[in-house]
Amino acid sequence: MVLKSGVFEKEEISLQDLISMLKKNPEISKVGGIGIFIGITRGFTKTGEKVKKLEIESFDEKANIDLQKISDDLKDKEGVIDVAICHFKGEFDIGDDLVYCIVAASHRQDIFSTLQEAIEGYKKEAALWKKEYLKSGESYWISESKSH
Image (tube, rainbow, N blue to C red; front, side):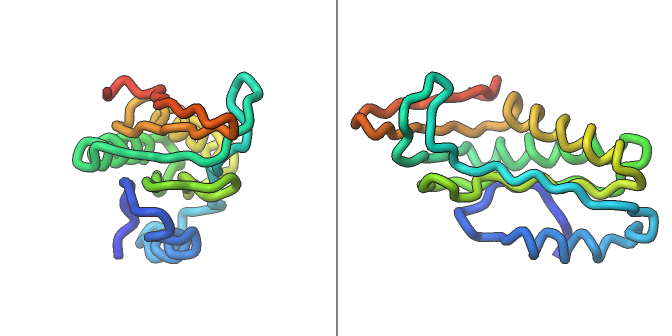
């Protein structure tokens, strides 16, 4: 299986699966490190309200293209060997994994800056929406994406 970015059902792919696929990249001998960002469900909103659960929906076809484009663009950076952004959809409890961003690069500086760009990229570009369900019973949709 080739390392690809996209939207997956909750728990459809594991972090170990991603690392295993990455290590099969023919360019692995150029890699000096692998950096991983794991986004999880936070228990509080930006304003401090308690969150009960989270729901993620996507326009799969568009989100898959968005996430793959972000990854492909980042692979063009000097020293970057491979990038994958795997975002989950469905219902999530507090602490559940929501997204894996994984970067393989020659040097740690390339890893950290590329992880940051990948995270900012999917938050702004991918056709993904989240609904926060609060402990108070209130719920609402949120999107940082330009792809509404």
